[in-house]
Image (tube, rainbow, N blue to C red; front, side):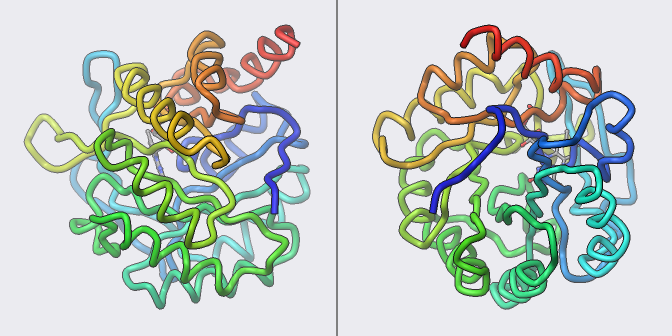
Length: 271
Ligand SMILES: Cc1cc2nc3c(=O)[nH]c(=O)nc-3n(C[C@H](O)[C@H](O)[C@H](O)COP(=O)(O)O)c2cc1C
């Protein structure tokens, strides 16, 4: 199974809202849009302050706040599909059984383009999510999803940007059936008051580039999507030059929601 994208720019999980918020700035038709991470049941997430600025970056501790899969399938997915988006549903479960159940339900939903398995939350324990500490944990979650997903739907595995383990993790999830790997997520960090958080934005671009370079260099047959700190064409080109087939854009959209459109146009000029 191969991953088919219309162009090499995707909307990263959690940074495009439900799609409706982005729509005034971005034509979603044909755009690969990753939903925020969904769990089976609604989750209120973190109730204390959730975001803070860091030098050249953003800290967030959302705690997998989401309305639950049923709400998404009934209320959000039809709109996204109607807008023409290529919808990848991001999932995380408290258990491997929940990952499997999510995949079973999403696999039957009309219009879904793929599933992104989030095995890279910066603070899974705090959020009550299955902790993919070791590569085999990440592989178990991916295997649970792959087993329940129709064979023609791609399964992406979103990995932690941990330079020392990312190659091993990529190998493990691909052996478990991932179609492609997303490298990576926000970097584990802390809010100013010390609570666990994820750091994103330009500050993590060099870390993402290192991780992508390692995975592409060591596992040349693996399909890699780069994610972390992309805001300009130069950053996207660096990840693509290292071997990624596409990039995901997250934090930059919060600052300028037209970023993804601009990136597509800039990269098209390269061709
Ligand atoms: C506000 C916010 C919410 C996010 N929500 C999710 C999420 O629900 N699931 C997920 O896998 N990643 C989530 N992320 C991480 C992004 O998808 C992305 O992997 C990360 O921020 C690194 O890319 P960036 O530097 O371009 O933002 C979130 C990031 C931010 C800033």
